[in-house]
Image 1 (cartoon, rainbow, N blue to C red):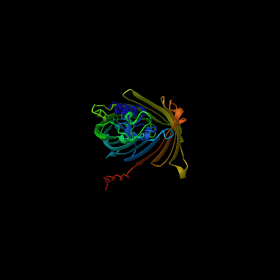
Image 2 (image 1 turned 180 degrees about the vertical axis):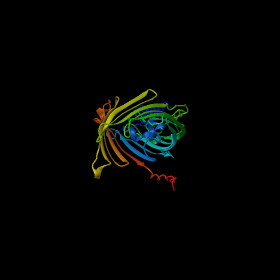
Image 3 (image 1 turned 90 degrees about the vertical axis):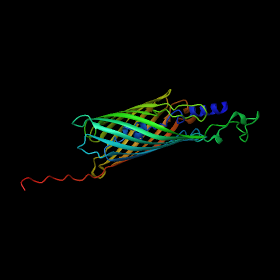
Image 4 (image 1 turned 180 degrees about the horizontal axis):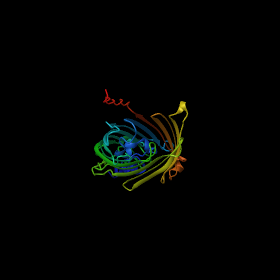
Length: 336
């Protein structure tokens, strides 16, 4: 049993995406419901669909693959309403290492939004996000000391281990709060807080219990137009999970076309830094309600010796649907 315990601990310490820590995305603005339930419905429109795919450490070992997708909606939001509800659905699948340590998450979020003033410049959001989480590990791909006969390693020898379980499911509970200040029609400030795994589900494969640490997170995002054609979008994300903490900050510069045939086209480029881990280069493009992003992580940690600086890449999409609102009926003229 000691060999099995040491093996699992090694996996968890080596893999950023393993049991003790959640998956992280460099383009965290393309995974809004993963960062905080309070980002549910935080967009201009009726429906939003997002998808992001991350492949990490492909140059070093079996790549870690993380996929996230979400859909959220504003319910019966109108210009006349001061408050409204939002709802969302989040799906994530993460596969790590030789033993295929897999995490699958399905969360449902519900958010209450309200303007705090008559001019609708200050907005408060409170949200809750219950869900389901499943973890699994392929023990047949793990190697143990009992399979070494003194001369060579023989994978056909019995492991001598009997894990309690190879997969498990848990209830998961997240919550969040957000504040938004609107400077103008296209410029705003968002301050977001979130807390994941409030119930700290048991993630142990053994008889003893091991709680998944709660992950508090904070996000600051500013969208500011410097001119008709140029906008600046600085963002910062900080979260802590157990003894592990992460700070990811930087900015995107976005260029907007004013030409008639490309009036809704935009292009962005940015540079971010994740503390003690990576420099992140980002590019993006969008037209209308569709946005796409690509990010590449250049390792700055000790792992760069093995990876030659090559860390991870991400591809992300976001699409917003806005329903056509019916025209208001004009009241009858009192003269006639």
